[in-house]
Image 1 (cartoon, one colour):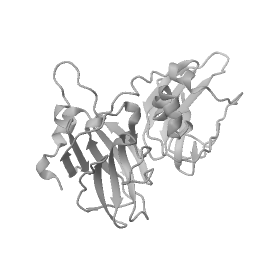
Image 2: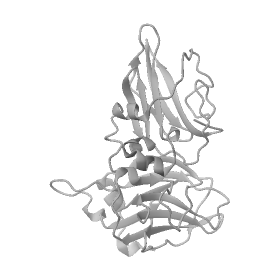
Image 3: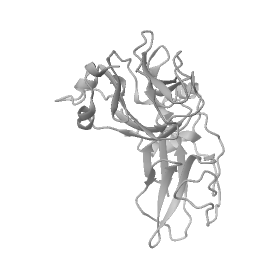
Image 4: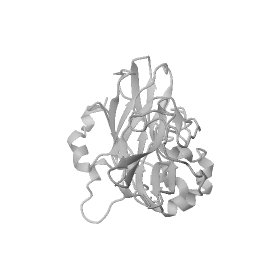
Length: 303
């Protein structure tokens, strides 16, 4: 799915004996591999693939079909009727819709150029059938604080782009980047109808992968019984870039469901950003509360 070094690759990895693993790679990102699976005696396998980049991008589609929103941010691979790989993913909005079966048009580190077996048939599958067998309950959970590895784009001076967006039109929270020159940017937080602070100027290198760590109250799961590990974070926006605090503030947050959490895209509108991040999202992962509090800057560090 994609072309020329940008996109998603679902591949087959041959294990010893009559076994294979199914894998998923985003060019330049992490590679995930399933547990080894036995190939049926007749060698005929049915593989079902669902990627966020294969799902519709129009927001009104998910308003009409809210049960399908977990698939928008997920990679799910099923092998002979069982889900063998299921993971969160970040899928570039507006990515090319070039979909190819049996040939690798993207590149990446794992797959060769062509599948050496035989494709008997390629058909579409109703998303609901994938959802019912995908175990997407975990995919639909709140991520908590997150770590994003990314590369900022070139040639975007004067533009604002989304980094993380939560909520809905008229009731959302937006963390965004605004490019002031080819090597200087600011990171801002916008609480809809109230605005928010903007960081100092930050030097950056468009050719280098940077690490962004951030926590918003709208990324956090609801409180459960006993101690609330996220209590210090629920009313705070905290953002670090390359382990340095760049923006810290107290704020209210609009309610958001897991399906209303977006990385690198802004489907809810607003005046601070364009619809999509133009750089490259390399990886996104959750950060455990105990890991985050070790980095959590005090409010005195606000810029």
